[in-house]
Length: 211
Image 1: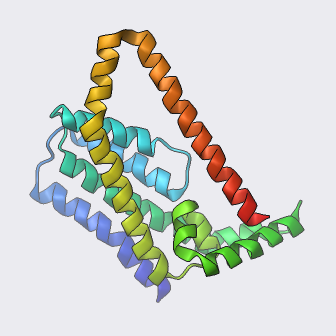
Image 2: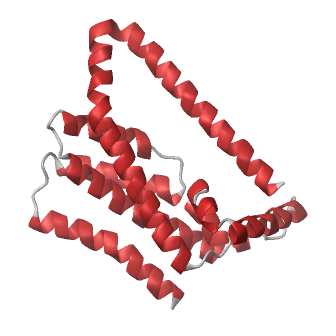
């Protein structure tokens, strides 16, 4: 029953994507939307991927009338939601067995799983948002809790980054064009440094939760 429900949720974004493709011609190259979908799905499965950079690029292209921003956000949301479900299913079916398999650091791994269960029991929604999708599967988060949280998070992610890039991205691009490559590199370094610091901050938070 649980897998059937998960499969239904997984099918909804795919059906939405097919419906859009059949009944509406994409504004812009379909390959661009396919690349966006693949990147968004990979990121939400939990793989290191270019989900955010590709979505930002798509938002900028939409602002320059090469893509449609509504289609960009819908495709990113559908793919991210599907990717989140896939990651959750992977964790649910294989993640726990992999983490608790005999081998080096077994006691530490088992302790981490138990600690994670406590966190997910007390703060399920927050934990779902802050961790990769497969982690929720490992800790057996119920579909009734995971699926709506995953879908809403994906919608906020797609709309927030997509519309943000649509509104702000062209100004950044124009700034780089006006002030030259050197300034653009400096801006890029600052942005990358900010992203790295944020990732390190999140990693420290997760380490504290596990310990």
